[in-house]
Length: 310
Image (cartoon, rainbow, N blue to C red; front, side, top):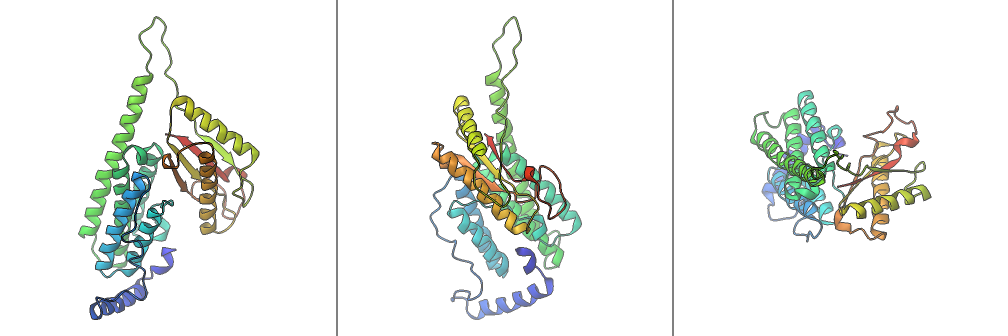
């Protein structure tokens, strides 16, 4: 995790050593940090993933050029993951050293972005959605450097990344709101003697898992069948699949488990004829419980995957 790499004294010492190595041997590859394995890959996924790849490549190069090998490597790995069409989440608040005010502002921004994405923003405005996520990661990384004292709060890396996020997320929200408005307008009935109710949007589909398992139960298979049938009935081709876990076990393990559960549902959708390019997958780990519990407490309601028809 990033948190273990953020000790200010250690980071300052290592940055100085790396800067000297880079100046003395600029033409040689960095022997410590992987800052290039994600460069020049062929990104052939959905438009959102392609946008993430391009944005994280640029961010990795910028951080490496600024003698920040930790984040140069971090964003390089995110670019490489996006090129492989695997899920890439924004950086977690807890994994960055932040001032209290910055943590609160970034947490609110993260909630805003997740809401826009859950409403179909990644499909409706993929380029702007990718810009929003990359700019958010740029912003939170710059805010961490304010906390540890390597830049000031008014540094361009903070103000520019924050402004880029605000501009991009506003466009994503506008696209999602416009789509909802268009759907409501199309669903409105023609004038008639008796008023009619507009059809409600399809409800989310929820399936649950056994403890420490990503295997689909018979009940989960039936719910997936129902989701596909509903999507076909409404002419919907885009799916958002989000996995969750309870708080029993380590946080990192639960994040991986939630992704495995979401990917199990994704595979089941593809087996039923849903196009892979229309499925966005995410894992939330134990971060968004349906039933709040203390750490280490197993809870069946939290071991779930949610399908939203976009």
